[in-house]
Image (tube, rainbow, N blue to C red):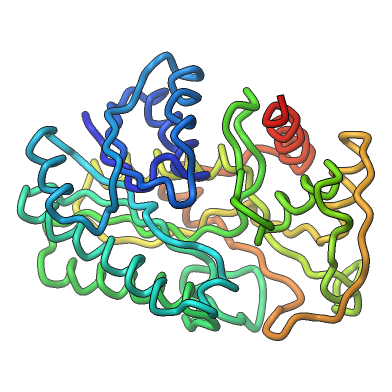
Length: 333
């Protein structure tokens, strides 16, 4: 059974491809290497002893998508072909709307023409905007505070309209929280270009002395240590959640939405201090003013995914920190 993975050489995509192989699927990847590297294909093969079918190109390229579907009998698709930096989306909103929405629209159009109607969509907890309470369930009101979040919210709306028009589609929308960590082999992990936007790769670069210190935005939130609390999930657990969702849509025609998180929150200082302690490195930090729009805490209610997907995050904060460090060290060799 072949699965098309758009953006399959990226951080979450590459880990999902590994889990797909290990679950017995064949994998076809399309990636343009804007936020990924070609060497990831070799790393996936090194881990699994299997090499994905690969097409270098843009998921907006409808002719390339047609070629892929003509050359392979694709059973399902998992869509990771999106830009994902919140700050960049504020600076370049048109780029985000153009890429994130057209990738999805073109993929669905080609899938429909080839009667391939099983889709797992990579959404995000950003669609909850600024929730008033925690934990966050899938029934919470939706809103957006930035263009990236808006593209995910609009993507969900597109898929809901598509399913309403044709209930032979089977779609899982996965809203996940903050992926961190790396594969235990140390071969693949989060390797952003330039200064990282996310906390864990920033911590890694500070510990590795590539950046001078970690900027902690606010220490006066109503949390146990005053710093913001978020739901950080190991990327391998997250990848396995995509496999569980794929199995779900294979079994029935539906459209459903699931949170993927751990169900608990860790503060910025907990993340930095645990990383330093576990890996015996220094992570200097400085306290800066709060950022506009940041909220005190945000973590998932994961009961629905546990109940319906038979999936639960298993890896601890310690494992997240160890695996991130191992990948950073391996990347320097």
